[in-house]
Image (cartoon, rainbow, N blue to C red; front, side, top):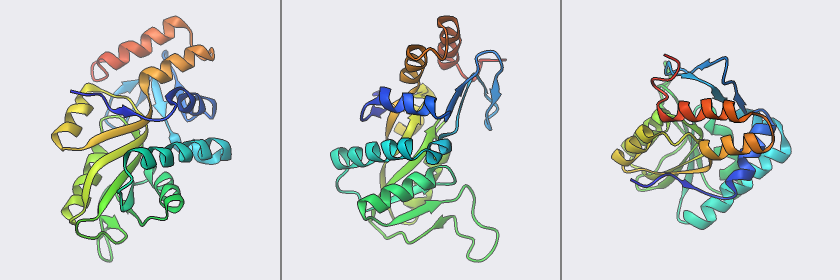
Length: 215
């Protein structure tokens, strides 16, 4: 099985995420993810939005990726909530329609799960901020496909690249792309002296089996 395609200068993007605090590394005091996983890393790429320089760098990388790999897309879809800002910025830069997918349907009005107009046969790119287990991205893909869209690709700013996640994307017939990945991020954190070698070893151990780590 092939790994997710990492596009653009992945070391540059990893450094940006670290320097703006979008990724924090805590080998000795673990974070708890929504999935229940105990993790020495936490990623909140929404902090990129607060830095004009970082935001522009990420947007430029996303635009270059689309121009190189997916010139035929006809719209952009963001995942709620963190994927929406980058999806909106990218759609505006490309002059394409934008929709976004809620985590669950609204409890009032039209009870929409997808906000915006989706056309049958429309080729959409799903934009996510962080790919961990891939659940939110694949749920978005499924919702858009049920509305008649063609959704063969997901792009994230960052992917952990867990093997289980790759299996899930392959099973859904979705190609995963990302601007940077876990291994690059750990190497970059060492290069700029945010972590020591022993701490890098803890982070590498987490990658090997995140579901058992911290148990």
